[in-house]
Image (cartoon, rainbow, N blue to C red):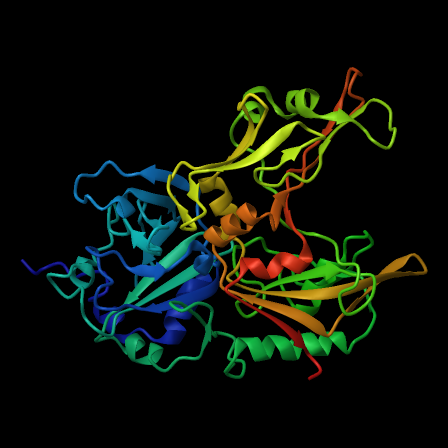
Length: 465
């Protein structure tokens, strides 16, 4: 009886080309294809290394982040005891286009190292690739490539190019856009090779700056330009000019860079307002136990501008500083500021009352999930707004800011220093009526002048120089 061929050992797998695999991915609804050249220790035993931080993988859609204080006795190393994991909706695909679900695929983040590992990708899957992933077989072979296609519905399709395949040889000389130290994005549009994404980004932003005033607009999901009338069109207009699709897929905005505009009263940066970093709802404390409405009634205060029957919960909450409006103090639990390290996987950012009771809290796991969507490369562009005949127009400045290398620990460092703070805008209108109206807005913000603290490298650049 003939031996069963592995998923990537068929004749089709050996002869598949770049155009073949691109077509297969396209038929599965894939929008972007990411590539990693597997190293000798990228195998099922050691778990493939995907990056140092989760922010290196903002282009990969993930599930809920779960904290895990491992009870495993396989290691006595306390560093290995702190980890976070998140599931991937991943399937392997073969050279014929057939898919094989890998239901236990996940990313595991070890913050103390730091490193992110790809795990569980063989468990429970009918894909037969152990030959090329088991270290005792050929799981240390050079010339292996991992392709990950991200689809419109946030599914991930994985393909393994083996050393003896034609595809492996093509990948060694393919046209890529570098998006992290580990992954490249396959340039399937066949545009001219981009030698530097930073330079390409600067060139495009200078082009937009030179356009002067631009009417407010937004790209539809079908990539059709449409007029946009609301007053918050600065970001939408910039994205439209960059050709960024509003598809909701977790991916870098433009050539691997997160793009954010910020409003100013005049160029270069005069009058810039605090930047909202993320708006996660609390997942612990009185807020979740009794509900947001009861939370506002208990810890809120009458509207300061005199609006009747309205209760607000706001004010800048800085770590370890008492907030007079709410009577609460923000604390970091499970974080060592001296080491800038997480010491407890179940750590939280908590609002405490005078008795030390938790009024609201955000687990590190939840915040980490939100922060993952922040890309490790970001550009901030100043923006002016004016109204012309009832239509808003925007102009984008030439003095931009480039930040490179963020991670969740940097967020915690900035919180401990007071650069990042909790600044909610929660309100309860018609509070004593039969139908009170609640507006939720829990936001973490940073003064724009302090935003550089969130990055390893932060540059101020004049696009005209």
